[in-house]
Amino acid sequence: MLKTIVSIVLGLYSTRVILKGLGESDFGIYMLLAGIVGMLSFLNNALSATTQRFLSYNQNISSISYIKTIFANSVLVHISLAIVCFITLEIVGLFLFDGQLNIPPERIPAAKFVYHCAIVMAVLTLLAAPFRAMLISHENMIFTSFIDIIDAVLKLIIAFVVLDSEIDHLRLYALLMIGISAFTLISFSVYSFFCYDEFSLPTRRSFRKDIISQITKFAGWSLYSSFCIIGRNQGLAVVINKFFGTVINASYGIAIQVSGAVNYLSSSFLNSIAPPLIRAEGAGNRNLVIQLAISASKISYVIMAMVVVPLIMRLDIVLAVWLGEVPEYSALFCTVIMISALIDQLSTGLSIANKACGKLKKYSLMVDSMKLLVIPLFFALLLLRVPLSISLWIYAAMEIVGALNRIYVMKSLIGISFSIWFRKVFAALIIPTIVLVGLYFIAMLFVFDWVFYILQIVVITIIYLAVTYFVSTDKFEKHHINILLSKIHL
Image (tube, rainbow, N blue to C red):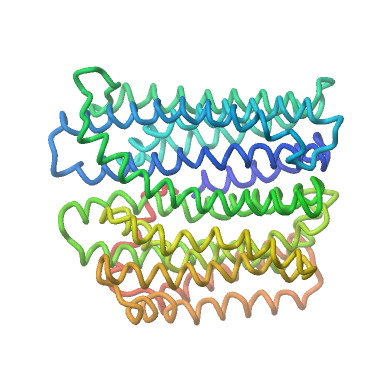
């Protein structure tokens, strides 16, 4: 948890510095182009999750030689797709700047340079994915936390370097960000080589067509799910760019930064619970899978809510202190996206359970496809001249639809019913949520003071966690909660 807090604080402060160093327009250009590359670099998340799933699933039921073969073939898949990703993105780049994006003409050369740098970052991140997956499968959160903190520190250093440099700030920032991606790849691969017996690079002898087939089949649907999420986020950025230009893209980029920081809290916990949940499925213990999925949803929501609620309550003040000069609509974007993320947490444990059971097709089509519908609906609302402050809420509405679909689909896959989820997750969290929101509304009645507000947050959080523990957790969760949270390495 300490790592998470440090990474979030450094990451958010880095955004303030780099926004000042680049300016709103250049910051918007960087977020737009890096996001377009991210539409294909979703390969990284999909394949990393795939590798981690196969390593965890086989950890206690297969020989070390077979697990080494799985890892070697996984690395081969990553290398192959990194090459495909590079070629595809470079081809897309030939057409992207031919009037397709709303970028000031004088900044197009710099924008093209940023785009090429972002492609290299995507490739390096993709190559690092199997090594990070190995660490997660071993529940080694210490080393990953250490590297993530260094990553956050380096980004802050880069922000200050860019701020004081006489070189084109946008070009320099993109170039230095490549160095961080290279550092992460080297760190994870070298550590895996020295510490884990499963480490094995692909050779002609290790090539297994059947394993590659299993990995690519699983990754295919995982890839589609990741595409839906990244495609929604970046699709909105493109729509916003068409209607409002790069300055409003900066506002949306800030909201994505805040969302990423908030999601980082729950993702740290989800990374710790995924390996035992997948191993439980591998051992055929479906009851434990359902229990862990329910607990993951509840705890992820609790963790995120205790950050999101106080942020939303004082968002204008927080953004002003954080950014100095706040781009228009930043508060709106942040509010909608954070509330949407909070809704998603209520059933997020079921997404891990789906990966554990390995039946991704129905889940991906019925659950994740709903996220892509946000783009045409949002575009249509703007064409109908519905104000941005109203039309943007379609983002949150589709998260609700997706959450309900997730429960419906997982009923047929693992046997969890809507009534069980409603009783053990939604209904169990009503009282703690009312207490949390109510206490912050009371806190709003007092004159704002930073010291007093921080003290309020500490007191309210303690009350909220106490109410959650005594009202919302069952015997299973009370027994295992300390073990699960210890995996995050406080």
